[in-house]
Length: 50
Image (cartoon, rainbow, N blue to C red; front, top):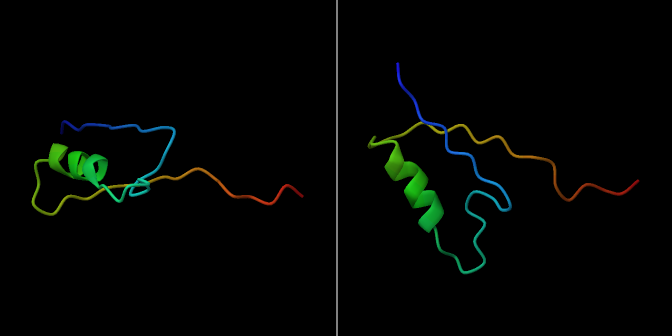
C-alpha cells in the first residue's frame, strides 16, 4: 500500500481569515478519492497560562 503524508504548519485546517478553503480543497483533491478519509491531529492552542 502506498500513501501520502501532507504535513502543514503555522495555521490550521479550515482556519483561513478570508473564508477560503483552498488549502482544504487541495488536501482533499490530493487523495484522488470521492470520499477521502483524513486524519487531523491538532496541537494544543489557546491553553490557559496557569
